[in-house]
Amino acid sequence: MDNGWTDPAGGSPASPVAWTDLAGGSPAALATGAELVARWSEPHRRYHTLDHLAAVLAAADRLAGAAADPAAVRLAAWFHDAVYDGRPGWDEERSAQLAQARLPRCGVPPARVAEVARLVRLTAAHDRVAPGDANGEVLSDADLAVLGSPSREAYDLYAARIRQEYAHVPDEPFRAGRAAVLERLLAAPRLYRTPAAYELWEERARANLRAELAALRTGRP
Image 1 (cartoon, rainbow, N blue to C red):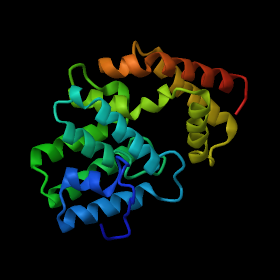
Image 2 (image 1 turned 180 degrees about the horizontal axis):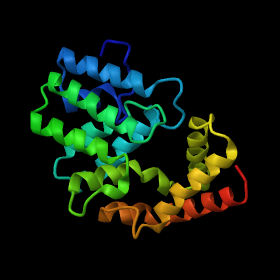
Image 3 (image 1 turned 30 degrees about the horizontal axis):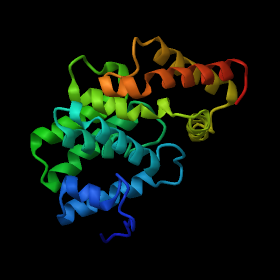
Image 4 (image 1 turned 90 degrees about the horizontal axis):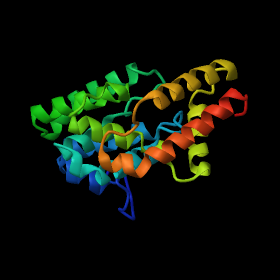
C-alpha cells in the first residue's frame, strides 16, 4: 500500500491487508486507512496507539462469533479512538463523526455506517451497552480486554501509559479520578458481557483493578 503505510510481516490485525479486507482497496479506502494509521500514530499518544488498536482488533476477532455484524465491530474498532485528545465523550463523538464522513466514501452501506458510528459512541461509557446488544457487547469487551492482562507487569505497563497520557494532571487529582473509574468498574456485576470474554478475562481483570486501586490509595504510582 502507498502513503507510507507498511507492515512487512503483514501479521498485525491493524495491517494494511486487514484494513483492505474490511474496507476494500479503492483509492478512498486506501486514503482512509492511511489517515487512520496516522491518527493512531500521533506523538501525544502513549496508550491509545496502534498497539492498542491491534489488541482491540485481535480481541474482537476472538469474540467475533458473538457479534451480529463482525465487520461493523471491526470498523468501529478502527475508528473508536481515531480522534484522541484525552477528552472523554468529546473524543468518541468526534471519532464517530469521522467514521460517518469517511466510510461512505469507501462504499460502506449506510446502515453499516450508522451502526459503526453508534458503536464508536458506545465506547465513551461501557456501562451503557444494553443487554442483547451483540455488537456493542463484543466491542466493549474487546476494548476492555487489556484489563485482563495475564501478568501484573503487562497491566502495570498499561496503567503507566494511561498516566503518561494525563501527565498534565497533578498526581492527587489524577489518583482521585482514576480511583473513581476503577471503583465504578469493580462495582459492575460483570466487566465482560460475552460468555467467552467473561471466561477469559473477568477474574484476572478484577484482580488487576483491585491491585491498581490499592496502589492509588496508598499513594504509590
